[in-house]
Image (tube, rainbow, N blue to C red):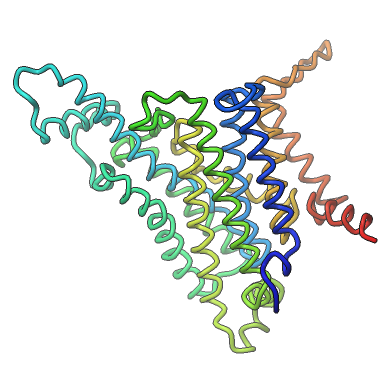
Length: 389
C-alpha cells in the first residue's frame, strides 16, 4: 500500500485534529492557563479519561482486530500504576523524612533515612523493611523502564504459555480472567510488599514539584495523556493499515486458514497481546498519579470486563470507536456516580444513580448490541457516508 498513514487511514488526521483542539480547549479553559471555567478536578477527569481511551485502544487491537477476547488487560493497567506509584511514594516519603531529620544534632546516614522511609510506608501493614519488589523504586528512570517491562513480561509469559498450547475462544478468556483474579487476590494480602488493600495513596503529590499547584500539574498530565494517546493511535493505525493488519484480521476471522497459508499465528498473537499489555501499563502509569491512589480493586476482573464493554459500545474493530466508547462511558460514569446527577424521587422509591449506574451501563450495552451492533463508531461511519458527495 502506498502513501503515508495519514492517507491510508483517514481517521488519523481527524483524530489528531480533534485531540489537538481538545488539548487547546482544555488549556484555554483551565484554571492554570486560561479562564478557569474548568475546575482542577474536572481537568483531572478529562486526563484520566484519555488514559482509559488508551486502554480501550489496546483492547480494540487485541480483541477487535486480532480476535482475542482478553478479560485481563486491566491487570496490566493496574500494574503500570503500581510501578510508578512505588516511585512516587518512595520519593515523596523520603523527602518528608529528610525534612523531619534536618534539624538533628547528628546528621542521619543514608541507611537511617532508608530505614525511616520504609517504616513510614509499610508500618500500615505491620512491616518495616523494604520488600524486594521495591528495589528500583528510588530511581525514576528505572521505574519508567519497569512500567514497560513488568506488564510486558507478564503479558509475554502468559501469552506464550497460552498460545503455544493453542488455547482459543472462551477458554482463553476464562484463563485471562483467572490470571487477573489471582493477581488481585495476591495484592490484597498484606505481606505482598504493596500495602495490601490499603494500596498506594497520595500519588497526586509529585516529588520535586511541591511548590507547583495541582492546577498546573493537572494540565501537564492532561497534555502527557493526550500526547501518548495520539502517538498510540497513529502507531495502531499504521499497524492495522498494512499487511500486518490484514494478517491479524485474518486470524480473527479464520485462524486455521491463516495457519495453513504458512503464517506463524502464535507469533502474531503473542506480539499483539504483549504490545497491548504494554500500552495498558503506560496508560495506568499516567492514570493513577491523576487519580491519586491505586489499590487491588483496580485489578479486579470486573474492571477488565468493563473495558471490553466500552469497546463493544464504541464499536469493535474501529480504533476511533473504542476511543469514543471509552470516553462516553467514562464521562457518563463520572456524572452518574460522582453525585452530579440528581436523584429521582418516585414517592415509593428513590432512584439513586450511584446504585443504578451499572444497570444503565448494562442496558446500554444490550441496546447497542441489538440495534447498533457496529457500536457508536458504526453510527459515525453512517453519518460520514451520508455527508459524502
